[in-house]
Structures are given as C-alpha cells and as structure tokens.
Image (cartoon, rainbow, N blue to C red; front, side):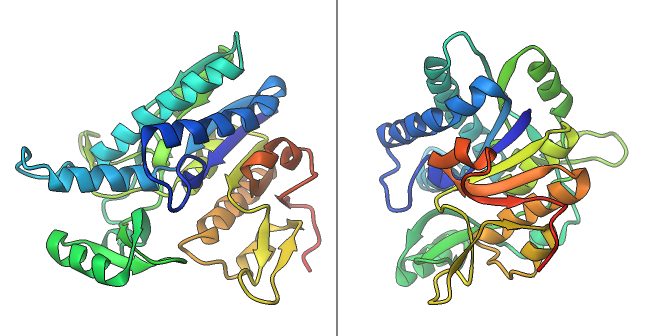
Length: 307
C-alpha cells in the first residue's frame, strides 16, 4: 500500500520546548521509530510541518545586523526542508538498514491572486504573551493572532495548486525509495502566465493540504495525518468532548473545527477521500501502525452512513 504521511510540526518540536538541535534530534528518533513498522510493509512518502522552525529562522534573520533585509519566507522554507529532511533521512537510514531514503526539496505552485495573501492565518514561530507579541508586531510589522495558548505570528497561507516535483517523487518511489518531501507545505512559488518562470512568495502553504494534493496525484491508497492527539474530538476542550472513531468527509465538515489547529487536517483528509475514494486517518504519532490497521485514531472513508 502507498501511504502519504503528514507529520505535524509538533512531531519535531513540542510546544514550549527549546528549539535546540539536540531536542529536535531526540524527537526525530521518536518519529523514526513510529514510522519504521509501516515502512517495512508499505511504500511511504513522508511530509512534515515547519512552523516552529521557520519562525525561529525568521526571527534570526530579522535580527541579523549583517543583512540589509531579512530572508523571505520562501527561502526560509527551503532551509527548513533541508534541515528537517536531513534529520529525518539520517535517522530513518539508521532504523531501516538497507532501505533507500531520499529527501527532496519541493516547490508548491500557488495563485498570485489567492485571497489568502490579504488575510494572514498561518501560525509560525513560538508562542508569546500578548504584550510581547504586540511589541514584536510593531517593531517588525508582523501580523499576530491568538492560538490555543498564547499569541503567535501569522502569515499568508495560499491554497496549493500543484507540487512541481510530483513526477520525481513518483520515480523515486518506483526505485524503492522512502521519500521525504513537501516539507512545510513546499516552497511557495507563483508561475509567470506567459513564460512559466517561477517566483517565490512571502507565504507558508499548509502542509496537510499539500500532503492531500500530493497523495491524490501520486495515487496513494492512504493519507495518514499524525499529530499530538489520539484522534479527532467533537467539542474539543469542553465538558462534552468525545472521540470520533470514524467519519465521512461530510461529518468532518459539519464539525466546525478551528482553522488554527484541527481545521486544516480535517479538510485535508476530507478532500483526499472525496477525490480518490481512498482512506485517510488522523491520530497520534506513536500509534501510526495501529491507525493504519484500524485500531486507533479517526478513520475517514467514503462508504460510511453519515449520522
């Protein structure tokens, strides 16, 4: 079975952790252990988030006196793909001896006129108290918004139209590689209407929506979205909270999940199931094998009766 795995940014750097290289390596070890059992039996394409990492690099770039201007988000996204891809490739190499591993920097085409450029919603970087966030917004011309535990920078998140390197990923899979790609949703680019020339844009594409698009184009059998909760919950964070073991795309869309957390994940799996008739699931990283085999997480499939 061909599985596209979308790792949450929290798989690499948990909320509140110091963004040290050693901390991220420790978390990557856990990721590799969770994926190894799946990789023995299935073709895997691994995508990943980059919110904490790109936020850190953006802050460093803003504060670097050697630069006349900070690096744009598209190039910072490319840097995170290289860094996280290397960590994943090396660690998966060690837990899957003899398996070919390829980490690929990929680019995601978005529309230049996407309305998301006027409405920043994608959280990047660390959480701040409100006063600190407001000061940074003034100093650095950032947009800020509240997430579940504090205030964070938000940037535009245009919809992915296509992943430029999809054919290359397909070829690498055909050669027996486990492929790491589309990190952080891919480097966001727009294509000139006349020449096709590419230009990077100041944005971060949602990695789950990119993973769903990539899974569809690769004709994957299963889209697996891994995060830090065991499953999708109805009325999350309230006394009425209850797990959702299975659902249809329509069920998920009626759930009203927040745009800053579970919303993009449920939309991604809903799109994949609707467009392909395949299976998708959302669940906890450590239960990856159990999720694929129907013993954990929230399974999303087209043949359930809504209710």
